[in-house]
Every structure is written in structure tokens, then in C-alpha cells.
Picture 1 (cartoon, helix red, strand yellow):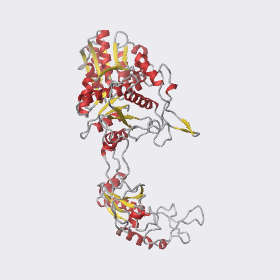
Picture 2 (cartoon, helix red, strand yellow):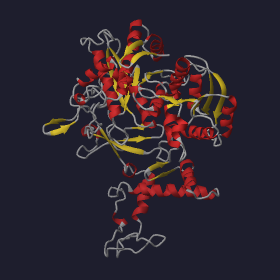
Picture 3 (tube, helix red, strand yellow):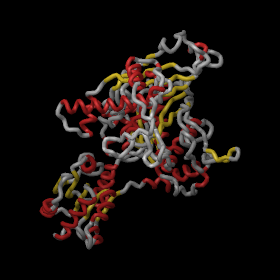
Picture 4 (cartoon, helix red, strand yellow):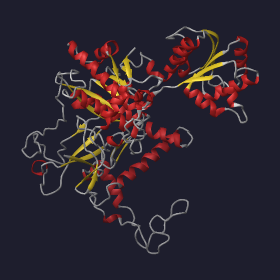
Length: 606
């Protein structure tokens, strides 16, 4: 069956408003004779002729139209109703002595206008705030569609004519079917070759535990503009590589992991916050609404946080493990209960700095300058409250308001404290200003040790004033940076690269003289793995083309590989326990019983 927008439904069914409209339409004076010279109100344009082409007339003979509206363009009545909608909105403002602004007209049209025109009931939706006011200003009801390809002998009064059934999508979501004015109402009949119910279930709809376990994959191998995203394509490839190894019980890699259970997965693609909300819901509805038991995500921060919210709200408890997102918000276990990260959150740099200060330099007294935002406080907590190597004595602890522009007081506090070791967890521009002021007073430079994060150091260097002696000021500045590529230098990383390069080619292939993408899909049968959904763009990889040292592979592919194995290990332990495979139990097993050495090193979860 198919569906098609049916714009002239109310005209053809002769609703009261449509009958009135057609009577008024046909009684209008003709505008076609002698190229009617009427112009618009400001005298710029003719209404019924082309001013630059003599004799080019566009007027109408209204009396030639049928009262039934069968020869009227199907969108004409919509323009009529749109004009009335605007007029009613303006009228509501004038009656309430409101200014005629675009914002006020929009408010009035959405909140104060409701009427029945020739196209049916007219009102506008207020939009959904939780989805960036999606559908605000869209029509709220009376949107009709033809349902095509019914058996005409059963559904039409006159089988010789094309026919459809009207479905009226109301704002309540109700569907009005079987309009006796348009069709014969009969008992249900399936319009299939054999007259029986079609097998409309998607692949693996009824593939269940213990034989199968369903998981979700969140990646974006195509960016928001429809172009290939190599990083995301590599992470997706690492995910499928791990799945194939786990499901293969004869390759000697993980033969005893999920020994009697096969992993099947649904891939959802997301670019942007709203897209991610839809993808999260897609995972909940995957496999004919049976959903998934766990999720591996390679999405960036914004998208990953959005899917976490969907997967753990309204009673949902789907465990998500991230291989790319690193936002400090993920450390909030009360808001993000069902999650784990294979990569460290941004504030974990503070743990590395804590180890440097305590174990390598042996410092114990420091000055601490942090920004008054989520990032700054997360770094401060990691350094002081949750210090893994020692608890530091803070000679001065300044929290810098985001609106602060005068840093002389901060510099004076550092100077009076006598601190020689300063930790800066602030923006790069703020750090540059503080260091310049302090250096002018004889602080910083040689004899001082400054620790900061990689993002602060990078942006600080760009933020110094012209003619500043950057080399002298930066002397003694040390910062920590997550070394994501380190695993590629290890033996396990090299082994991964070797297996990576042996994977099946997934790029374009010449088929019947035409270059075509790989058409493999996920196990839910919803999403192509290596091409856009319309087949216009390929995202598959030529694995043999990668360097043997792995230098051209994104290190996050390795983290995605380990994230997939981590989820599989948690599911394996949970299934073997005999407990129900749900989000709460999976979280317990993931956080307490999953620990192993992966290709990126030793893995366990706090």
C-alpha cells in the first residue's frame, strides 16, 4: 500500500464550507477579458497580466468552473484559508490593541485562531519545546491522505476509476477511516497476492535470548551534509569487526565469549541533538519494538548526551558505553545512571596532573585557580576531593567568575600566598591575562611551576598580547594531554591493526559496469552500513590500503573495538548468571565484574 497527500478531499466531499466557497468562487467577475488592468495595492504589479509582455493574460473565467470543484486546482482553497488565517490573527491583535509585529501575529495565529474553511478545520500547533519547538506553526489537523493500491473491486463503488481511502490525521492522532460517502465499507481484506496477511515483520523481530542478544550501535558515517565522515566510518568498522569476532566461535579470538549466544545489532545514525533523540527512540523501538539490551556509541558529546537521556528516561534503562564522547557531564552518575566510558572524560586530565605533582615532583602546596563552570569545578574535584595520589594543600583557591575581566586581585592573592606551584584550570584567554599580569610583577617564568590542561595551554599561547615574551612566560608550564594514539604502539595495538587490514573490502565495486556501494545492512534491516540510505554516497573502507603501522587509523576505532568487547563481556556474565537481562542488572555487572586487557590497555569501570 502507498499513501499520497489528498489536498482537495474536502472540496470533493462537498463539505458545507467547501460548497459555500465554490458558490462564491464561480460568482466572481471574470478577469480574463482584455487583460484586466487591476494592480496590487501599492501599484507595483498587475494581478492578471504580464506587464512586460503585451497580450499575456492570466485572468480567469470563474463561471467556467464546476460547483463540484473537480476542475479547480487542488491547492487553491488552501491559499484562501491561509489568507483568512492571517486576517483572523491580525483581527485578534487589533481587537486587543496589540502592536502588529511578526511575533505578535504568530502568537495570535497559533493561540487565538481556529475556524473551518473549505479545506477543513484550521488551527496551528504550538510546537514541542522539548524538540526545539518542532511543528510550531504547522497545521494541527484536517490533513488527509489517499491510501493507494486497494483492490478496487472491494473498495470502490466504480471499479473503473482510480480510488483511495481518506485518512484524516487529527491533532489527537485518531484516524477516521471507511467514509461511507466515498467507499463501500467491507470486512478486512488483505491486498496481497494470496489474499492473506503480509509478513510485515522486520528481520530478527522474534530473535530472542538466549540464542540472540540485541544491541544498538550509534555512529554517523555520513555527516549532517551527507558527506562521508571517515572517523565515524572507522569506529563503525571497528564495532562490526568486534561483533564478527565475538560471533565467530572458531577463529581463536574470543570463542568462549557468549558461547551459545549471537549478537545482532541495530544501527542508528545521528548528526545533531534532535537527530540523536530520534536515534535513541529508534533503538528503543528496534526489532519490532522489542528494543536493545545495550548500546555502543561513537557519537560526539552533544549527540551522546541526548541518546543517554532518551535511553534512561520514562522508565527506560538501556546501558550505553561511549568510545568517543568525553563531556564532564558524563561523570554525573545521578543524571547518567546507565553508562560507561572507554575514553576518559575531559576532567580526567586532572588525575594525570595529580600524579605528576605528587609522584614525580613531590609538591604538596599549590595555588589553585579554576573557572566557575562545570568544567573548572570537575577538574578541581578530581584534583582535590578525588585525588588519586595525594591530597594537596591549597595555599590559595580562587574560583574565577566567567564574567570577570580584572585579574589583578587574583595575581595579588597568588603573590601574597608565596606559592611557587600554580594549577590553572581556566580558559586559555583568562590564563594568558593572569600570566601576563603576574610576569610583569616578577611572578611566573623561571622559579615557578605551572600545571594546566591541554586545551588551556593551546588556547593560552594564542591569546597572549602582541610583543609578549611568550617563551619566558611559558617557561615552567607543563600540561597533560590524553594520548589516544598510544595503544597503536603496543603489541596488542599492532595485532589489532593486522586484523583490521585483513577485513573484507567495503568500498565501491564495479557491478554490471556501474560503480556501486556495498549494500550490507544491520541485523534489523533498517540501515545500510556502508552507504547513504539512497545509495548516492559510499562510506565503506578499503582496509588493505591502511598503513601496516596503523598510523592512519583513528585511535578511537580501537576504543570502539574495546567498548564493544566490554559490552559483550558484561552481557556474557549477566546471561550466565541467570538473572534478567535488563539495564539495571547489566549496569551492575558492567561496573563490578567487567575487567580485562583490551587493545587499548587494561579496562575496568569505577
